[in-house]
Image (tube, rainbow, N blue to C red; front, side):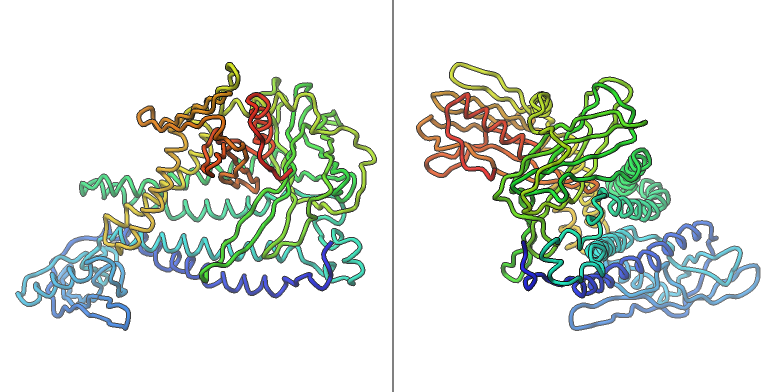
Length: 594
């Protein structure tokens, strides 16, 4: 249990964090509302303006120099006649600002200056409802628009994310958290308002609102932009640019579908609450839980509960700060499902080892206990809870308490092996051979996660392609395009490779094939294999639910590692496969954080 003197006050820190994010959010939102949207509205309106001949009285390209860059703008004055009346105009383009994005300003200025010197008339566009309004160039400049849009979404999204994170951290603090030191030492979980009454809410509510805000803002900009710009881009004979622009509304629609699914989930299951027995969960004792759901009872209804202890750390290197999370311990089990009124009641417990760390307040370095409960696919009947999934931050402390009412050890459920085997079969085929096993990890494993990465990468790749092919700065195209295409290639590799492994008393042989074309092989004799061990590969977070994926490696005496299994969801599944392989092949199991 933490010493009172070591406990850090985070109240002022959250305000500093929120104030740090405010300028980013304001800059992104201001650019969106004061520049991107007005530009789209003006461009759309000007498509109905009428062409007239205008005579230039003056035209010049104005260079504004600073110590870091030079920007350009064009100023001009021109006369035109409508219905026998003379008018004077000074608006040159849709945007009136100065910039150095591409060559638009310099090329427009040079064209107008030449026309003014030679006395050549130029074409102006006049508002038929108000002839005093006119413009010389009504082109949209897709590159400039994309540059502003990407800037607004990236900076605004980052600022909004920082402020929401600060608000979330602030929300866990209250006046009750500033109680006497003696209370803090004795019962720290009572100082957290989300825990104190043992009615713990799922943590996806904030993420759902953020998702809706992001989906609405994104679609509010991307859909009108695509509707107005893509047809004209195709008319100009630039299908590559049109395709890149289409990625923005497609990503927006994907966000909207995601938000709708999240809303439907919340509407169906409501505000579910978790009750613990004992409260809090007890290191060296039991973690027991009860969860009521508004789902009609069915004899085949099954749910999977996963409890894990995650270590969050912050490190600084070379002036940069990085954050990391690592799963220290994990257990899975199947709760008992009982009819309760018009719904069901889930009840289960786990035994917790005595050496694990307790829950800690969020900070630069802390430990958090996370519980995920989700429906198991494949249950027969019409009463299945399709797609149910919720995650909870739960209190776990060193109290050595046992559960009073819950006797069912979910980790010993007789059907858990069947569920784990089904999950394992999603990514691998295990076959016994003489003296060992043969494993096959097929193409397309974990395709849902890879498709999500593909969409994310396509957004950045599309933005980079758009910026590259237009008048935006080259650096932005390289950065966004580079990140996007790397993610796209990674997702294609994740879905487009297969892995075949054979392990027996003679040694191991692996072959990884890429798209059925390239082949990469590795081999080692049995005497070279020192041990088999678990390695963490990557993590994904969706709607507040974190999934960590692992691989198994054969570590050779030379220190080299050969992957013998990958795409294993959850540490428990990785540990189960590791134990099975060691049992069937005789190889040594490496150290794990059990």
